[in-house]
Amino acid sequence: MTRHIPTELLSFEERQVRAVQLTIKYPNRLPLIIKPVKGKGKVKGKGKEGKAGEDSAVAKFIVARTCTVADVLFRLRKSVNINEYQAIYLCVGDSVLSGSMSIDSIFDRHKSDDGFLYLEYCHESVFGRSLKQVFPVCGNVG
Image 1 (cartoon, rainbow, N blue to C red):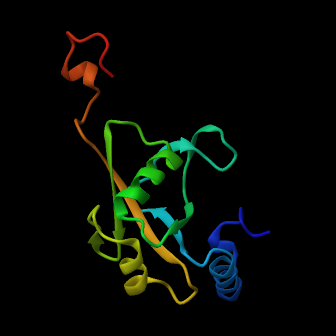
Image 2: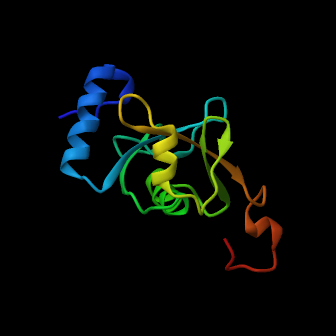
């Protein structure tokens, strides 16, 4: 099975076959591959082997056609183990996606020739430091 093999190790034809297999098996779902934005670093989380502190490089999802970007962001946040102090954004090409956008419409406009929709994610610190540093009198915060 090719499920755990990184995309870069599969040829275009193998990825295309895999996308067709997924589409046949799950006709109401869309295959997504989400990678970190290049040059922005990777989110520290659980890597492929589940070891804490490894870089999480690629997230693969099969989502319902009715999903929104916000739904995918929720799943992605859990998958790459981003903390509550970081905001996460999805991009396609040079555009940041709005949370209310339908994945189905994005898929129709931006899917790759191999049948997958490739998205990129980036993250930013919301406060720039922990809540304990912002609110030192609140011992239970953060």
